[in-house]
Length: 208
Image (cartoon, rainbow, N blue to C red; front, side, top):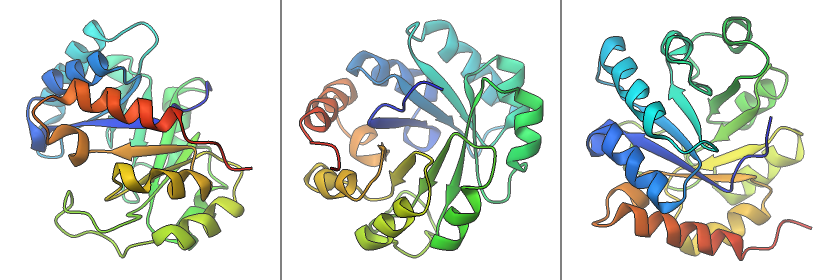
């Protein structure tokens, strides 16, 4: 698997049409986009993922949220699984060894368990308080993130309430990538905001 980019973006339908959102994310330079449509049917999601794949840059990776079946049908780059979705081992069997599979975790225990699973990365959050989810899990914080990063060799994607003024401490805690939703999508110029995030992240020294 190629290394995760520092910015992990999500085309979330709660902020508009995922197809148009993805186009703006690509325009800004994002090369890892998760397509999320919690309210839509599998058919609608498949249609959206197909359209996004048809316009995605050659070096972009498209991940489908929750739906392994849609990821397989569309020929997407992989799937991102929640705690109640298809088990990662079964998703790996369906999608094969070259697909990217990630899993959401919300505690030290879940992240530790995920490190034993056939996943390519572990999403950890919420790091800070977030308004993106209706019923968010307890905040993990920087110390909790650092503790998780110490017990797994898998790449960690930090998510949840992360703003630009906190990226240094998040990356220095050991995260490989930062997932951003509202701070990018809830802006007048998504592409410009993405570019700004990429520029800032490039300037942060990796954990020594």
